[in-house]
Length: 227
Image 1 (cartoon, rainbow, N blue to C red):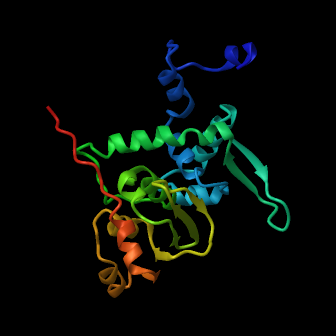
Image 2: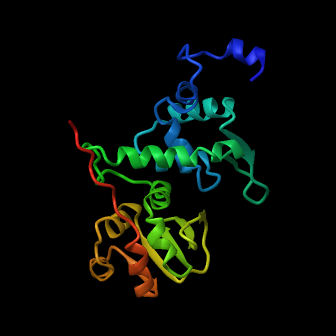
């Protein structure tokens, strides 16, 4: 940060701790959730607003501008024929993933955590990357998993205990077409694939044995003891 930017930036805390600076960068309401939504690639303004239940266009504009000033994200225009503006994380912005995952895993242990609230597609995908049992995953053969949540698609590649996920369509050995909310029910609530299909909540294609092995890799953490 230059001397000029230091002089003009409003500080929240008189504190040199990196945690204090992190709060100044992404601590305003909605800011960290915007970063979460961009974790799987660029998004248009309207796509971001649709994914963040309750945010106003004015507040979203303010937060995007603030995150851009903080060098967490940047704007660019897609080439023709799209020719639309999108927002995407900077390379440094993408490094926030580990912090978001750690914070999410910690908060999921709160007695006040309500897993029935609305869930965005990006949140569901980041949840998988957070809650995966990596030791158990290392024992499984590599597989590709596809997800379609309405207009959004993702592809994950399970290999060596890791689960990188990218936005977009692609060939997959198992594929779930549902909503992010219902996918959470299948993964964390262990709602059987066949029951979800019978209720019209899921369109599944692929290897069912692999799908069940994949689902078995995830569980919400135990609630913290409040003393």
